[in-house]
Length: 406
Image (tube, rainbow, N blue to C red):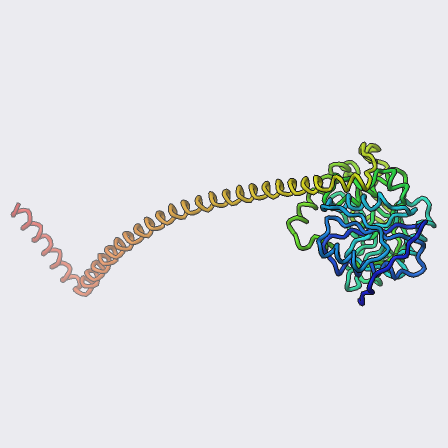
């Protein structure tokens, strides 16, 4: 994509939508994302909010020099995805808040289609986009929650395959990825925004949409609002950190929504069958006693939030190292036992080999004696009756001589 320079967002006194993008350290993808939004066609009035979420110097310089007209929220430290989005939402003026990852490129009609769907459906608290991989295949056509995890519907399919399975229709879903998600501002604030319990990332968007559903709103998938997304690009450079964040978010989510998950649909259930949030969810989970955080509060608390995240990550790493050390120690003991058993078996084998050699010697002696006897019998057979009689007489005489000599 040829980047325009600079990327300009016209000011708006009364924006209908507020697009929130977090900036961290991916400068070129960030700029491509912002450019694609700036080139939106037939879009309603909107404002672009860029949250510098502990952004790198290069990302800050790029935004300062090549982006014009955006609202900037400057967080001195990275506070995680949910809190970063909350900071952007805290200054949003639009009726609709749209969260957009910095590793996305939106179609020209994306913004208009999302807002149109929200206006068509006043009962909808959130509208999810259709996400495509960079090769054009489907990444997500809405997602569903199962007893043992989540499933991105249509993942890896072509658009034709997805259409043939009924996935490319506007419909109610369990949730849609916050990589490109519209949320009605009043509904977002009523449930106290993203929950910081999921920091730094993962499952906060699923939890938000479960709480929106529990509060009475619908989550709708809009197939005409399309986005290309490089899934996981922002954390791909730190696989271990991503593993920790996913583990933590999953654990919080499973604990909070255990009853709903216990009654979740089977993977092959019809698309219309959703996780029973309203039937089994706890109403106290809507806000969990939290109040709506402001952008100023998040900004002021950013250093301590970042420190807390670092400490929790370090504690998880230490626990993992301890577990690995224990596993290695177990394997070492197992190896030592095997070595002892091998040594014992070696001794037994050597003993058995010696016994076999002894038996072979005995067998050779017996074989030699048998050969000698066979030879004598053969000799006797050749002598005939007279020869045998002489042999017996000789044997009797030999015995007599032996007795006389005693």
